[in-house]
Image (cartoon, rainbow, N blue to C red; front, side):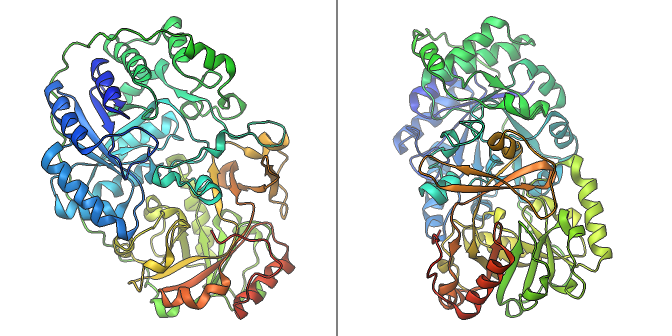
Length: 588
């Protein structure tokens, strides 16, 4: 039977989870966890939590699941020293690969779980993380049943699936909306939830998803061989934790689906216009969306606190076997030395210019793999690098391989990777790392260098001046709208009320406008997904020399809604390092 994993955002919620029959709990301290807004645990409370979990035979999973800057890594390791000595967690939940490397080097017997923030959508991602010492992977919420089954069958590592609680409309670990617009980073536990706000358009709340509920399919999930079933909710009350966990405990123990009364209780405990299983069943669309209505709030407030009846003692759980950290090693096509990668990268995510020849002096031209057939690249093949889809499920792998073969036949030998999961698809290509790799510290840079990358695009959240010179070329955004969200659901239809067939050259399909009039372009992405961009372009071209002195030799000019004339004007500004006079912009 799969393990039941419950949230513990406070000591009171921890006791509720144990009383309700959780096999495992996950919690975090006052720093470095992806729910900074939860009550969380002081060091003294963590010691008590470790003792309580051991006495109850409940496994304790500790969340260190944010991105880290270099200056924070010593404190994170000091936190791990305390935890290893005083708390003895059964596993660490991590997002940052640089921290994972350091933790495994210092504590080889530490058990690592890969956070959903690491954006694992395929079995290849699980295989790679196993090599890096991860014993379990928290799967991306966007994975459907057949994708979960494929992962369990082929990845060779334990799996964890979210079965209840809040859903993000953006792919797990890929949202920059709160960080770029509100200066509260979702990757660092401070998300301001802009997806829950109203916007102008056909649907007043075009980004707000209902909560996930997979209670009716628990037996199906268990039959797939999933290791753990996870309830989201470290920001929720102890009563919420007890009610939801005890319901799932009964369903698992009794091997049955929920009754109508149990589903009603779950809805009354917390919901947003009811629940959805849209990702699991791949029934995307309006049925997945909902908000917290007044009647939902009244139903919750109308409840009386439920008496807690401690669950019978659970069997003692065997500890997980830690997996060794294997330093990455790959022999790709010859990596390009940093000294050969200076200047600018022209990246085209929207309308293509009539000719790419006007950007022939670029160090690299980045084009979407799935739109190569629309591009005339004769004579520029050596400069072209094709950026791959941000999400590739196992079912899409054959199509991506087909597109890569076509690119190879046209003479293209470079690719820009948004995910390490895609490494098995690109043998023979020169590799460039894309911004969704979420690189925020030098430890991650050195780890990824072992995979043979020629360059690495730093996270838009990173401090580019803190890296210095590294074994691979560093790249950052010099000009362009930061991609804020990448969604499985079609946001174009949510905004416009319809989704017309795509026409070449008209990829800016919708504009999301917020309450203060800021407009966020929405472009289509591979697989009829959507990409939401910032309302203003970031501008750093006048900081070119300072960035180069800090070790960042490549500046990307990211084009989305610009006309060809505007594209060429931006290129000229790069050549002169001109300040952004007359151009609305942001520095982030």
